Amino acid sequence: MRRFSATTLGAGVAYYGGSRVVGSPVQNGQAVIPVAIGAAVVGGAAIGYATRYVADKYLGDDFDDTAYDQAAADEVHAAIRENALEKSYYDDSMLTNLGNVLSNSKQVAYGDARVDAIEQMNLGNSKQAAIDAAVATVDGFFATQQENLIEHYSFQVDNLLRQVTTINNTAGLAITDVFDTDIDFHIEHDDPITLYSFGSRSSEYTLATGNVYNYTSFYHEADTGGGYQITNTVDLSRPDAGRPGDLSYRSARLKVIVQPTGTGSTGTVLNVDRFATVLQRIETKHSETVSEITNFVETVYPEYEAGDISLQDIVRPSELADRAADTEENPISGADLAVMGLESDTQSKTTVRLVDDDVYLNGSLYLKTGSGPSLAVGSTYSPSNFAGPVYLAYNNYSGDNTDLDTSGVITVDQQFEITEAIGSDGAELATVEYSDEAGQQTTTTDTAELKEELDRLNELQTELQDQQKEIAQEGSGGGGGFLSGVDQGYSTGVLALGAAGVAWLLSKN
Image (cartoon, rainbow, N blue to C red; front, side, top):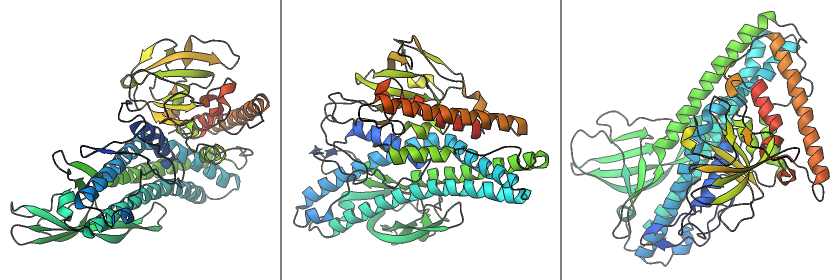
């Protein structure tokens, strides 16, 4: 979570879906970005990108080109700059958080695929049938990630093209006044390159499933002092910059830069290279998971007898994440983190103070250490102490900061203090216990161990149902939805215990 400041407090309200920011002023040519709410919403949304299809991309405010039909050139330039910088902030937050959780998200795909493989073996089908079923599940999981990312990119490109249309329709304003590009065109001389045009291009990408996904991209053209005219069509599946001397090619090695309105600095507002890099990482994780699940079937199948393991009442990791998204008022849920196997406290209601911001939030910390730590109440910690990002899934915030929703997920990027921990029995705790995640780093292929794990999973499922019933009875007016009712003495982590159990039991890699 980024530090709040006087410029971010009250800068406006951002939402999911409609993606608007109200009252975000331009001061000295610099956009004032609602950093606090952006960190909270974008962080959680990006986690969802890695576990399930996210229908509402969090993009920042869309540029309204019709609002500037009669505007002066400097006003249009200032509005485009503010909007472009705002959107780049959300892109950066989304890509950073998605990149942080991609490796862990493999556990969800692996867990789902292992269930499908066992199902085929229970039917007495061939080893190849088990492999095909498992791989198809892995393909579908990573195809969803790919589609989420590319759709987000397409929306941002559409916004850029609306800005370009407005520039072209504004007297006294040229593309070069507002935008520039940073790319190596591989021209074999040192002549300067001057951007002069943007335009829309339809492109396509082959998903992990083999299906072709069509999306909106763009091309840009430039002149050189040597008399060359250069055209680059931006293609997310081409992370190269063509061959030396090419004047027309496809590449994703591009940054779109916005110019200051007067004095000031330029800023990158659409980093296509980062989108292409994350897309490549998804492809790599897909390939790794296919290899791992294939090895699982190859190892287990010769010793497996149909019916050795019952799958009755088993819930897949992805189903728990979907259930949380469908039934909770806020679609951002700690369940997404739990199903990826991140360590969490599952037995207490925890209050966390963000030191720099002096904000108190009730919920659960999700982190990855490899050591199963105990965090002491009253102690202060830095995210740098842990082996990966630290997330906080919080609920029922009712403080004065209007930039924070009632509940959500944030990335903690400042020191934090555990100020209070209350156990499920109501007793105060001196420490918050985190389970050792070492068990999630191996893949068991022993049938007896698999059966034991699935039996334990059924027990966790029953525990989750009992917790939900208890909260529904204690809460005013019933309720008791998934991850609801944390004010009854349970943290978000308790209600995600079933999801965490699935990650631990089914999603080992």
